Length: 90
Image (cartoon, rainbow, N blue to C red; front, top):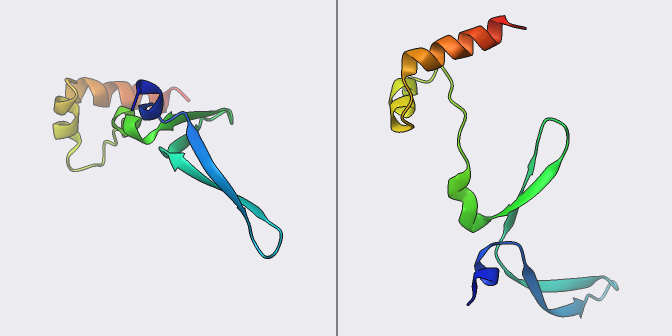
């Protein structure tokens, strides 16, 4: 397999079948693509092999907040200050 087959951007349809109701279904081989929709409704795709690129949002009420901050190389108190400043700026 080449890089094109691994990046999750292509599904190859090996054949199409027709059901007894007349619906045509394609049988695709390839990686699953995920769709992300941002706050503006824009969508982007990424392959399942890129799922490690997703970063979960930090939540101050999470009991493991400090551990998660430190795992990302962040200072928990600074993150809390920035979050509070952002929340109160609205």
